[in-house]
Length: 281
Image (cartoon, rainbow, N blue to C red):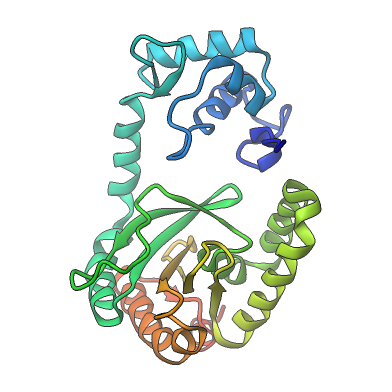
């Protein structure tokens, strides 16, 4: 029988008692973070199991979230789903990302040129969250992740590129959190991550070949925005078309050009060795 780690153990919220946090708000956010595309309806008992919060507290927190439209009850049932209140904040966040407007055109052009899916993601906890997605109009044989999809840091190309681009203290802290979150599965994940980080140090890009999504290969390059915020761009598709050789020889240069174009538009720089030297980072 598989056991789902509590939300706190997956690194999605601060540990109880962390400095400058409000425990009730922390617990309410933990409930919201339990929902995902694969888990759209969750009952109080399941929320208590996932978060480690006692069920009576879950019931009170859920009632508060329902009152503010962050959650809504299942019609005719006892479970909850995300409410319309989350949409307005998400839209404010997405609209505030100027990089999305600057990136959309170059990303679509790259998707058409390579025949692959192209994504832009930012970090949230121990995962990357897609904030933009472009696919070629000429083919259906592409990975079909949507805006809002979460992917893991250690074995996705997006997460690996992010880890390769951040400063050493940030990277070390995230890796330690990943080690604690993944337990016995960590050595195998870490082996692939370390190979990817070594390649990133040489080239500025990271590859994931079937390690996150079976039969899907992709390559990612990170970008640092004008304020230093790091995000990752990704291009890939079915492994039979996007072989590792093609990713490195053909897609990597095209993705590099795309990321540099977006960086120039927003006053940032690509996390590529040459670009980093030019900016003095």
